[in-house]
Image (cartoon, rainbow, N blue to C red):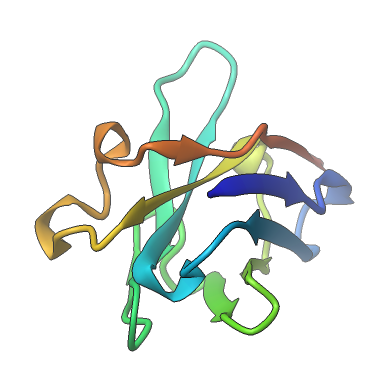
Length: 125
């Protein structure tokens, strides 16, 4: 599967942004799709994931209460709605996918074998 992330840009603190991860390829429903982010000088961190099949959702601490992940299997798109953005959310956001990923690994980037190119989100104060 090939992934393309989009929707990044400049937003003021307190604002919202919706990121999209568009996929091509077969059997998209069989893939867990996640968002990770990486800020300059910092390690990559898990943001959110939506499981294959029934679409169970998982959130990292950075996302809880502010971000919402969703997927449209017909359109092969995963969205990340980000609200109440803070300057600390400034980062490059990547989407990633893995087929039939075990629940124990949804937050670990090394288990995802397909990655999009990343989209920059900059939150200004």
